[in-house]
Length: 271
Ligand code: SAM
Image 1 (spheres, rainbow, N blue to C red):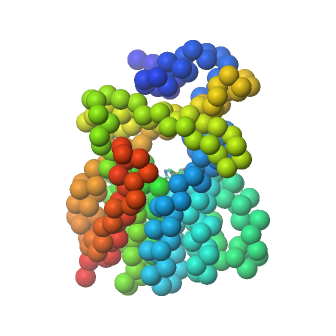
Image 2 (cartoon, helix red, strand yellow):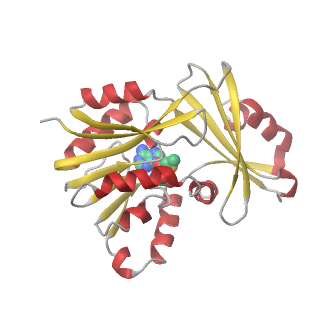
Image 3 (cartoon, rainbow, N blue to C red):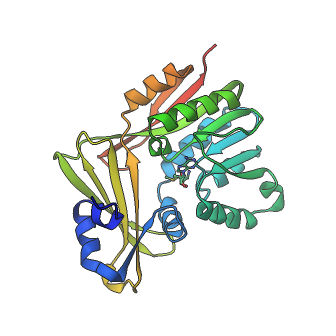
């Protein structure tokens, strides 16, 4: 069986990639070529950022942000005037975050520590008043990874500290296998077309991003893909409880579309 990601890319995105043949290069969404694409499209959904920052504001002490990426949340978290530690796995994402930090006033920059690390296995040797995991990134981890994440979160939460995370319920695609197509215009005017493929019941969905319109893309055309777990919110809540975390709040976020229902969860270490 082929393990070539080009051969296994499902749906219309797979067909389109095959059509493009050698003119396209397939990348992971968070690698050297993918990170700028993620960064370009990540800033376009401000609702979740607003809710997470508001939830973090009601905590005290230093903030730890997990899977910080290129800083979509890190930068607004820094406006709270607190110390922020941003932990991220992908070097290319860290590079963009560090570039962004160089553009902010030194007083703000000095409150941010960037750490290369795996959110499912880290030891920072200190505690935080809030641990934030946005962009529904908990679903990037498999079950073992999530167990590690909960362990690390418990170990790093100060007494009374809160774990603030968002999760997504993937539903209502309408058919058993379907592909949602979303067009995104980045703030700099660059266009992208994002294909999200999911078979109902499958535990992963595949997101693939092409430049749009394709006709004006210059070869080699960068196509980026990532596989994201499908983690029902009820299962996530049960896992948090089993890991010794108590759910203290559960807030639906304003919908970005009718097929993804995001939820903000707040958890604390059980007494
Ligand atoms: N938080 C950022 C945001 O809101 O835009 C980035 C979210 S992006 C959907 C997911 C990020 O998680 C990527 O930057 C990816 O490199 C990172 N990531 C994936 N697995 C990780 C892990 N095990 N530990 C830390 N970061 C991870």
